[in-house]
Image 1: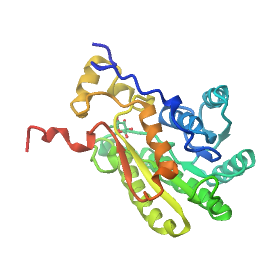
Image 2: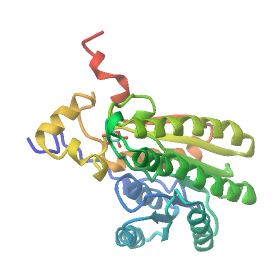
Image 3: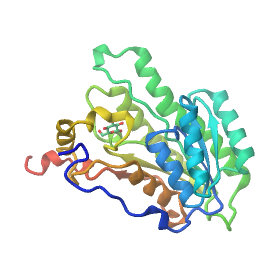
Length: 283
Ligand code: BGC
């Protein structure tokens, strides 16, 4: 069996979908690889102009821009270390100048620094918090300023702005050996819900996506051999790994007016990982 698993994971033809985000501008952080890349391309296919953030890997960000432009979309690569206040402010300035405004923010940049608790350094703990949690806060703060400034433009969207935090199944599933990562994602959940409560009166919707095991560079070891893939599938009732495009589809939906009455929720896109498959025959 190949590491693609037993099933054909050919996904639907996403190009034929309606232009749900026509006329909108989006900023996606960590958009030069993995889930961020797919989300940037997906939002562009749905009609959005996209700012493609990168911190390491400028060439990969330029590739994403080129891929979007090749399909007739508009995109711009924007640098920022999302954990740095000044970088984030400068990135929003550049993105807004290039795209006119920002209607959709996908704070997606994230990383893992895994270690058992007694081996975990303060630097490993702090780095994950800085990028995964503080980075989202800093980007959200700038985006909300722009949403408030612009307000609702009915012809573009019935909301003043949409924020889609990239969380994880580990905002609810404990993860031994990854306490920094799990704590950052648990933090994202409560930040997202509290923001949704604060911003709903201003017509700003705040939601999250909780990806399960998605085929990206962050978790290569979990899927790139047949043995690892089989072990992973014990955690995935739907019995296939997720593809980055699975996450992009959810992002398009949550960003669009189809989801206008949805705020303060995490949409898990995980093939059932949060259904705790260990209990299918146990408990
Ligand atoms: C992590 C991956 C992991 C997945 C499922 C994600 O949030 O980044 O490394 O495979 O959760 O456990």
